[in-house]
Image (cartoon, rainbow, N blue to C red; front, side, top):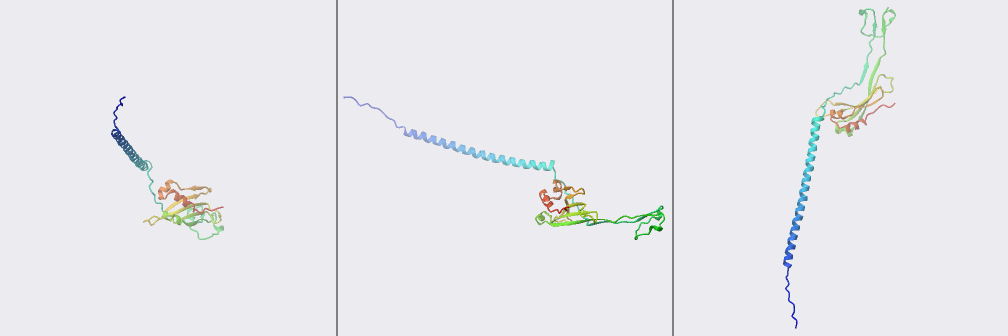
Length: 222
């Protein structure tokens, strides 16, 4: 009768479970370290962006103060001539100084004046007319209205000799408004734009607002 073979078996389930738990724990630690590293990366990136932004602000401020300082404001008092009249004084010319007359009392008869010659010139009247337009959209900027002046050298002119556009800027606490000339048309009929960065600094109004005010200028058309 043959004998049955004998053999011994071992149960390693407990060991396998412990190894699996150790592997899971190490995996959890690895995941935690990765999340922590990502969080630190985002924190450092945010700090870097903020630092770069502050440095850009400081550099621009230093450029403004050192290299390109703002211009000092100059108060320009308004001087508007409504009408300019050139008066004519008739002066008879004589060979002696004592015979000169410095006043004019009306027409004279020169037939009995001998060698006196009388110089008579025509009266020339220079005057301006103004076009006034209210600007409620610009009133918050201290510009309640825009004015355009048409200058004539005589009453016979149909078209003005020159033109200019301006406004009076009213400022809190000041009785006298600031006269600001923004454009003009010279005697050669050339348009001259006076709005630039320098004028914007002087009057304390942005260049966009000054250009908006130019749209209300009333130029004469031929």
